[in-house]
Each structure stands twice: as C-alpha cells, then as structure tokens.
Amino acid sequence: MTLPGIDLAELQRIVFTALGEDLGDPPRDVTSEATIPAGQIGIAELVARADGVVAGLLVAAEVFAVTSSGTATFEQVANDGDRVRRGDVLARVTGPTRALLTAERTALNLISRMSGVATHTRKWAEILEGTGATVLDTRKTTPGLRALEKYAVRVGGGTNKRMGLYDVAMIKDNHKLAAGSITAAYQLVRQTFPDVAVQVEVTTLEEAREAVEAGATFLLCDNMRPELLTEVVAAVGDRAELEATGNLTLETAAAYAATGVNYLSVGGLTHSSPILDIALDLRPR
Image (cartoon, rainbow, N blue to C red; front, side, top):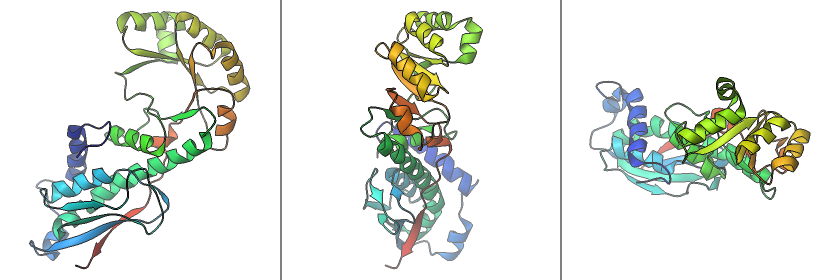
C-alpha cells in the first residue's frame, strides 16, 4: 500500500504513533473489548458529513489493516482528489468489529485532516486556474504529519515548495543578517552545497536586484503589495522565478497572480485548514 511521494515506512510510523496515542500501553480499547464478541465481523462505511475534496483513503486503509492484523478488507468507493458531497460513501471496510471500532478515531483523524487540507487547497487552485500562477505550501505543518499534509496539498491541486531544511536552501532575513548581505549569504550556500537549489527571500526591489545579480534564480517576495510585485516582475522576472508570500487571502489571490509572479505560497493550507467532517458508520450485516 503506497501513496505517491510517501515512503511506506513513514506512513506506518505515523499510523503506529497515532494508534499508540489512542490505545495506551498495553494497547487496548476497553469499550470495544467489553461490548463486542471477539469473533464478530462487521461492515463499516466512511461517510462524508460535509462537501469537500477527499484525501487520505489509503491512509485510513492502513489504520484498519494494522488494527485487524491485515484481515480487514477496504473497498474504495471514492478516490483521493474526488469532490464529494455530504452523505457520500467514500469506502467500505469489512473485518472484525472490534478492530473497526478500534481504528475508527485514528482513521478519521487522519483522513479528515488530510481532506480538509485538500479541500482548502482546491479553493486556491481554482481561483488561480488560468492565471499562470500556482499555489505553494510551506513548512508550517503539523509536527509528525508533514508528509501526509503535503500529499494532501498535491491532491488539492497545489505544489510542495520544499519538504524541509535539507532539500532546498532558503536564505531568509536572519541568514542575510548573520552572513552580512544577500550576496554573501548566497555565495556561502553555493560554495557549501553546490548541488542544492537556493531560494532567496527579498522585501524590496533593491534586494530583488541584488539577489539576481548574485546568481539567484528563485526569489520569495515577502509581504510586497501587488504594485511593488509588478515592479519586481518587470525588473527581474525574466531571470528568476518569483513567489509572493505574506498575508495572502482567497479574496486577494487574483490580484497577486495578476502581477505576473509564478507562485503564491500560503502557510494556511496546512496550518489553518479546517477538517472535512467524515464519519464511520457501522452497518448491519
């Protein structure tokens, strides 16, 4: 069972950690063990309780596989990326009833969170459609869930900016201050990690020009108004990809995209998306 861009070991780590929070040590579900015969087999459905975009069905499947020791069967009715309506059945699970109910909250926590991120991202993607700009996520993710949340962004139609501090160098204000200048910071990164992509945060037109002259080909334009962004695009846009960031909203997205930037980065995709309400309904056999 694999998800694009997510290592199986990473997925299993997340699932076991989440289940461990719920089951304690030694692991047990005292209510289900007390009320449900060990041999009882049940059928449950994952059902949308609100309209949105679903993401994480295979993550939920992994949770049920773990609690049932691989005996549960998971039948997808929807697919990640589908737009669903309240009342839609997303998947059916058949297996030991105890295992289904033991998995319930963990599976729902993960799929609801991921679907919420995908739903929010889809709103941005639709607003930016046809503008030439793409919505990016950030590192403002829930600790331990970055891989899943960034997957959900992709499902929603967004793009991952970087996974962490290791795969892309991002020269920000504190780095510029510590190194002495944008040019010095850029040169130090290039000398130390010649094969790593470098992005430079800029806040003025002058900084944008300095960064490009130093060799930067990707600029993060922080908290610039559309008027200033238009000037930056005119000055350096043919030499670097440009990303707008800082206090962007769905209401202002079109105006920022119209400046000609390549990307809008939105931390809120992962730090402020509400969940998509999804339930598990046990059905009579």
